[in-house]
Image 1: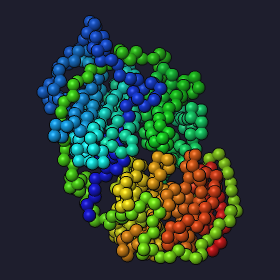
Image 2: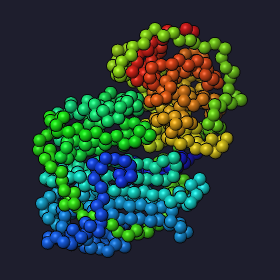
Image 3: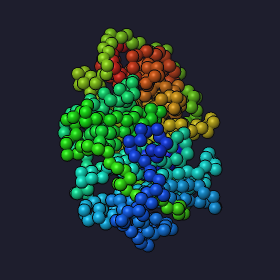
Image 4: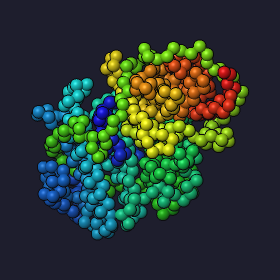
Length: 576
C-alpha cells in the first residue's frame, strides 16, 4: 500500500516542513517575559522614519512581487538600519477563506549594506526560507480545511514573526516565532534564534560567544529549578538520548547548537519551547544567566552595558493580504521521491481500549515473579554510568539482536517518532517484515473513529517465535493523551493484531520478555510509576510493582532483572 499523508492531531506534511525550520509560536500571546522583543506599532515607526532627516527609500521590484509579496505599495521609507515588512497571505476555496498566513521580510538600509557588505546574502537566504515555509504551508492548509469533515468550517493558519533583539558590530540577534494551526488538539509552535556576525555574514554558534562552556549546563539546571521548582524531574525523564549522545542533554544541545538564545544587557537569555526539553503542558521555560551571577560565562567582547533602543533598530511595515491558490495535496502527491512508496502492512486499531483477538492464544497459567534485592536511590540516576557499570548499552531504535535488525521509519513530529517498523535479517541486507503503525499509534480506531490527541510512536520492538511485540509510547502526560503507553502483539504469519494492552503500561525505552511474561514499565512526572508484568499471549496485566520514579530501561542477565528509573537503580531476582 502507499503511505498516507498524516493529518491527525493537526499535523500535515506541511507542518513537518515547517518543523524542519523549527516552527515556533507567536510570542505576543504565549506568556513569555517579553525579553524576546515585540512588534512595534507600524504607524508610529513609519512616523519616526518620516521625521528623520536621513531616510532610505526602497522600491520593491516586479521580481520581488513575483516571489510572493503580492500587491504591495512598493515603497518603504525608513531611517533605521533595517525594515521588517510583514506579508499577509490568504487562500480561498470556492470563495471561502480556508487558510491564512504571514511571514516577515528583512530589508537592509543602504548604509547597513555598505557597512556590512557580507550580511545581505545571509539576510536574503533567510527571507527566502521564511516566505517558502508559509507559501508552501498555507495552500496545503487550505486544501485540508476544505476537505476535512472533522474540522469543517475551520480556517487554518501558518504565521511566522521575527523580533530583532540586538544589532551591532558583534551580533545581529533575531528570535523567530512561527505558529501553525492545522486543526487537532493544539497548534504546532516553536521558537528559534538566528545570531549572525554582521561583519562575516556567518551564523554564530552559542559556543563561539562563551568564555567557559563547562559553566553552561549546570547553570541552566540551577536556574530551571529556581524558576520552575520540580521541573527537572520531567526534563530529565523527557530526554531521548541517541547512541553517541552526551547523557547531559544541555551539553548535547551545545554540541548540536540547538539553543534558542541571545546576549543582551543582562546576560545570556535562553528559552525552551514546548516539547523541546519537556512536555507540551509545561509550556515555555526561560532562564537568564546574568553577568553578575556568571561573570566568566560570556566573552567580554559580546557583553552589552546597556539595553539596545529597539525603536532605533528597525522600522516595521505591514502589507495587506494577497491571495494564493490552494494546493492539491492528494495522497498520490506524496508517494514519489520525497516520501517514497512502500508495501508495508498496515496494522489496524480496533479500539482504544484493551483488545484481544479471537486468534490470540489463551493466557498462560504460569508467570515469573520478581523479588527486589537492590534499591539504590539518588537525586538523579545517570543511566549511561548505570549501563556501563553493568555491561549494558542504552536502548533505542534502531538496534539488532541475534536474529533481526529493527529500524524505525516514517517519523512524525521528530525523527525518532516512528510510525513504521522495518525488520531486517541479522546481516541487515534483507527486509523481512515491514509494518505501518499509524492507525495503531494515532487512530482512528475502528470502534468510534476517534483519533489520538497526541503523537504516539513505536519506540521498541522484539520478535519472539512468530510474534512481533511492540511498545507504543507518547512523550507527555497521560492527561494530554490518555490513549497512549500501550504494548501490542502482531501475528507474523497472518500480519494481524493479536492483542493490545491497557493504556499507560509502557513508556520506557524498552521492554523484556521472560518465559511467558512480558516486563515493561510506565511513569511520568506527577503520574504513578510502575513496573508491569503482562501475559505475553493476551496482554493481561499480571502484576504491578510500585517504583520511585519512571522506569527507563530493563535488562535481564540470567535470573536477575536490572531496572533503571529516573532516580533509582533496582535489581530483582526472577523466580520462574
